[in-house]
Image (cartoon, rainbow, N blue to C red; front, side, top):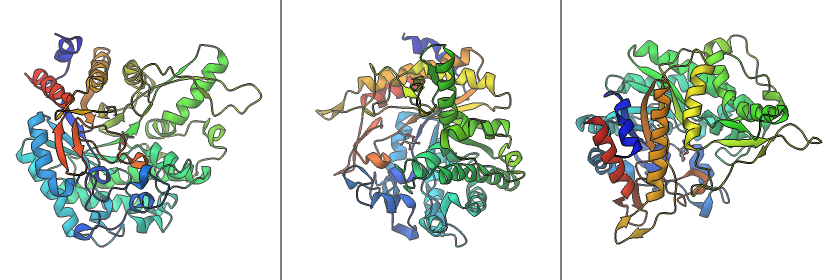
Length: 449
Ligand code: FCB
C-alpha cells in the first residue's frame, strides 16, 4: 500500500471526487445556437495574444461530444464534475434577451450527468465575459456586477432544482490582474487603477449574485473559487518577512481579506500605487457568509526583499526550480497543506474548503496509443496526500477536483500545454486515456470502497 492509500481512510464517504473544466476551454461551437461573442473570442483572434494564434473555436468540441465525455467520467468513477457556463450562450449580449438554445445545452449536460450519477457543480464566470458588456466597460463598470447577479439568478432559476452547488467566480485574481494589469489575458488591459477597480466589481458581483441566488433557491450552496499560492520568506529576517507579506497580499489577501474580513489589506496601494474604490456599504455586502471556499492550488513561492535602493514591490522570487511542471511551476505539495491549515487559523469566518482545481501540465508522449505520464501521477498523488495531511490537522475539506478531465485550450498558451488525464488529438478529436486516468480511477475506487 502506498502512503496515500493508507491515508484514504481520512476521506469521508461524502467526499467529492471530481474533475474540472471550463466552457471556453473545451466547448468550441462558438457561433452555434445563438451564442454571442465573448472577450476571449476577440482576444484569441487578435494577432500576438495567444501562442500560435490559437483560439477556442473548436477546442475539444465538447459542445457536440459532451455525451461521450460524460461516459468517460462515468468510466473514471468520479462522483462530481465541475463545469462552467458560458455567459454569452445564455445572454448573447450579456443581458435581457435570454437564449433558450444556449440554456438547453447546459440542461442536457446536467441531465446526462445526473443520469450517470455524477453531481454537477457549476461555475458562473470562468473568464468569458460577453463582448457586448466589455464594450460598456466590462468589469471596470460597476453596472456589470448587477448584470452578473441577474445572469446568476437566471441560471439558478433554470437549473437550481437539479444543481445544488454554485461557484460565482473562478480566480478573480486572474480576471483582475492578468486581464487588466499585465494584459496577458482578455480583455488585455494594462492599467493599475482599472485592475483594482475590476477586482472590486468582481467581488461585488460575487456578493450580489450570492444574495440573488439564495433568494431564488434557498438550498443552493454557494462559494467562490480563488487561486491561492502561499508565500515563504527566504529566511526569518524582518526585510524578507515583509517581502513575503507583500507577496501574500498580492497573491492571496487581495481577495481573501475583503471576502472574509470585510476589508482590503492596507498594503494594497504599496503594490499597485493606487487605492481600491471606496463605496459606502460595499465591504459589508462583499463579506457574505459562504457555504464553501473553492481553492485552486498549483504551486507556492519563496521570496526575498528587493535590493534596498528599490521599491518594496515587486519582491524577488527565489523559489527552487529543481522540480517543475511543463508550465515551469515549481512542484510544492506541502504548500497545499500549509495553505489549508493557515487559512483555517487566520480567517475565523472561513467556510469549509473544496479543492476546485489541482493538476499539472507535462510534455506527454503518445507511445503505441498509450501515455505513460508518471510525473503527473506523482504530482497528483503528492497533492492528494497533502489534502489528507491538512485533514489530519482538523481542516474541513469537502472535495478534490482534478484539473482537468482532458487536454484543452490553455488560454494564452493555446493548445501547447496539456493538463488532461485524457489525451486529446486535436486533428481527430480522438480521446485516449492516460495512465493518470487509470491511476485516479483506482484511487477513487479504493477511497469509496
Ligand atoms: C487555472 C484556470 C484553469 C486552467 C488552469 C491550468 O488558473 O482556472 O482554467 O487554465 O489554471
